Amino acid sequence: MNLSTNRLTIQPATIDDAEFVLRLMNSEGWLKYIGDKNVHTIEEARDYLIVRLVSYNHPHCGMYVIRLKDGTPIGTNSLLKRDFLDTVDIGYALLTEREGKGYATEATTEFLRYVMEDLGYQRVLACAKKENHASFRILQKLGFAIKETFINNGEECVLMETL
Ligand SMILES: CC(C)(COP(=O)(O)OP(=O)(O)OC[C@H]1O[C@@H](n2cnc3c(N)ncnc32)[C@H](O)[C@@H]1OP(=O)(O)O)[C@@H](O)C(=O)NCCC(=O)NCCS
Image (cartoon, rainbow, N blue to C red; front, side):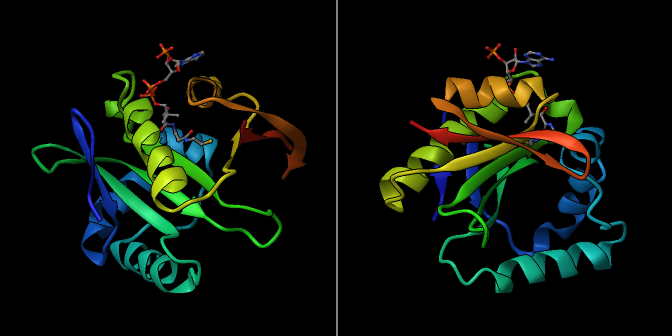
């Protein structure tokens, strides 16, 4: 599976992406808006990817790497099926220095199309901290609407769903 847009490709992450994932998961934006997942060494990044790859018994769920057309990794999309939610949710993150160029919107538009059209999910969720304005803007552009708000670890979060 290899998704493609004007400027980007999106492919499932492999163990070879550990170095990039380590950098991304310790970037400013990830730590602020997604949180510290205790992945601080290359070994922990490999373990994280292995757990992610083998623990999702839902087909196609896991982490996907967003790359420029020259192969440079710049971010991730994710597709998860959490026990407490009734359908899948998607996520996105970019290296801090790659923000502000529309890459997240471009990749996630194609990723959402893949999840809905190719995988056949009729409803898709996404979750963001209330203060994450860039994330809300992306979800708004992709046609998501607010489903409910909730408190997670003392922070206000919003669950959004496709209309
Ligand atoms: C969220 C994230 C992917 C956005 O990346 P990005 O490069 O800014 O995304 P895009 O350029 O595609 O789109 C962002 C949109 O939000 C807008 N935006 C950015 N910062 C904003 C802010 N502080 N307030 C309001 N809107 C904002 C942009 O103008 C753009 O909208 P536009 O196309 O209408 O101009 C990036 O900041 C990131 O990786 N953050 C850390 C991880 C994260 O938060 N993931 C989401 C968890 S829910």
